[in-house]
Amino acid sequence: MNKEFAEFLDTLILEDIENPEHPSDFESGHDYAVLILRLPHRGKNGELEVNSLAFLTRQGKCYRYNRDKRDFEAIGTFQDLHRILDETTDRLVREIRQYHVEIDRLEETLYDDHSPRDFMERWITYKKEVSLINRLMFHATLSFELFVHYGKKSKDFDELAYADILEHMTRVRDLSKAAMEKLDNLHDFYRTKVDERMNRNMYWLTIISAIFLPLTLVTGFFGMNTGGLPYTDDPNGTAKVIIVSLILEAVFLVSFLLMMSPRIKRFRRKTPSV
Image 1 (cartoon, one colour):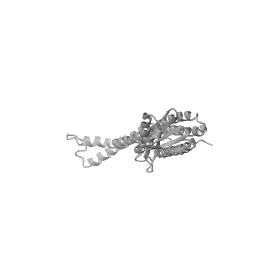
Image 2 (cartoon, rainbow, N blue to C red; image 1 turned 120 degrees about the vertical axis):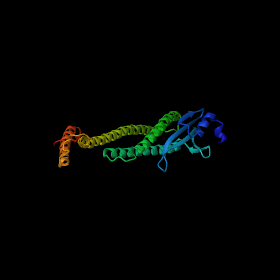
Image 3 (cartoon, rainbow, N blue to C red; image 1 turned 90 degrees about the vertical axis):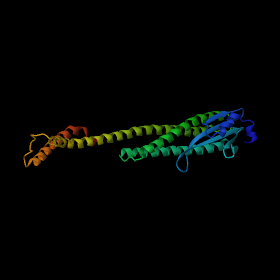
Image 4 (cartoon, rainbow, N blue to C red; image 1 turned 180 degrees about the horizontal axis):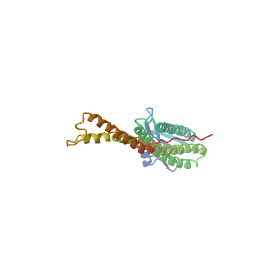
């Protein structure tokens, strides 16, 4: 790093600046201030990434830390810094809105009863990413708020312009929290749909078992190796047993369906009269 910066920057602050994993933070010295912002970013492949930015302001001039060169580069005045941060926060707002669009589409598939097979994989991905965005923006918003409070002391600092950036960052934080809550509700609804499907499957299995129950009883009765069974010596015994089985089957099935029909009535919305 240039000796000009190394001379007045505290060693601990330098370590924080050089550490890409350091959370968002704001530190001020005698005549300088350091703003570290760790912000989310969707890469070209669509995966969520974390971008660590570090800025230095001193005597009305602003610098940006270049991690490749491991040194600060001059970017101009507070207006130039505002331009960089404004573009960054605008991108964040667009990206978090895109998350809401994707989550809404996933929600519609549940309402239409056409949920994708990879629903839980998508849900876990969205939940993981918006949770990370919320954590990052929580710390970034607090740090940037301290930076705005510090910048008010400078004559060249446009308080309204930077307040707009702070509002954008707060909006991203709140939208990410809203997305998390929406995902939680979506998961509960999905579990309800899955449980309903399982109950429906169990219902049909019960019906199938009920259909074959009389046949099982009749077959078991005539399968006993004991004397005195009816129709043993009757040449039409098999036909009579079949008729008896069908009658028992019909009586049992009708009784079972009448008993279960009130439980399987579907909801129908009543159309209001005009």
